[in-house]
Length: 78
Image 1 (cartoon, rainbow, N blue to C red):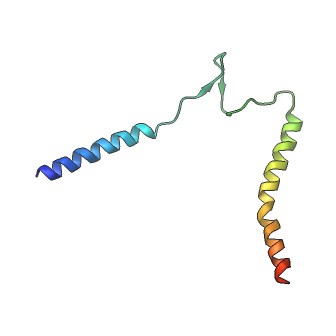
Image 2: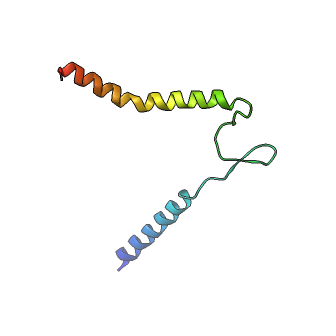
Image 3: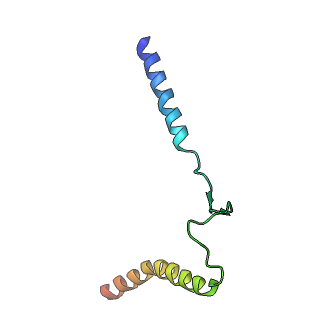
């Protein structure tokens, strides 16, 4: 009987700790109290250059598997 009680209390304690750790973090606020949903400053006047850099970065990352696949096919002689 005491083992069952001890195991239940241990599970209860661990689940309480887990629930506390799973909560969302506080919203990021600037020194002026405004809410920012991004972890970096948005480039207000440089949107075109930011978009170009973002597309190049994401496009290169997306193309890596296709480049690797084409290389493997070419290497195999297919």
